[in-house]
Length: 116
Image 1 (cartoon, rainbow, N blue to C red):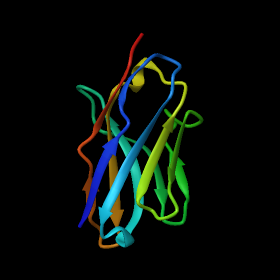
Image 2 (cartoon, one colour):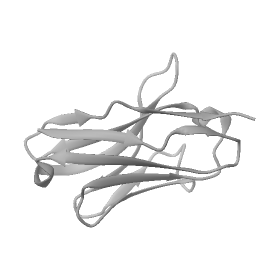
Image 3 (cartoon, one colour):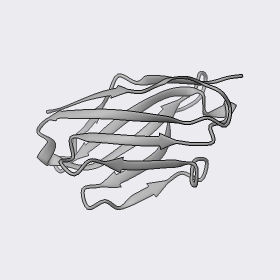
């Protein structure tokens, strides 16, 4: 079992920055890939970025060059640095962990609102 808790969301002006965190606990050693998703009202959940246990990263075109995913050395915390935020980045942001046992785990989400 893996538990995930996101934090760091909030209200920010267009062009601003936020850093989201996701604290992982439980059987962390089983985590193969972690990622960030978001879901805006009336839209499907969207994959933003992933990072493997080896540190390989991938990004959606919508956030490439603006967002950076990273993990601490112990693998306990996942981060999403978000720069140059746009109005359309407003959504609930979710942390995800995919394990070597082919299980998916999700956090409860954190709200990011970009507004002037």
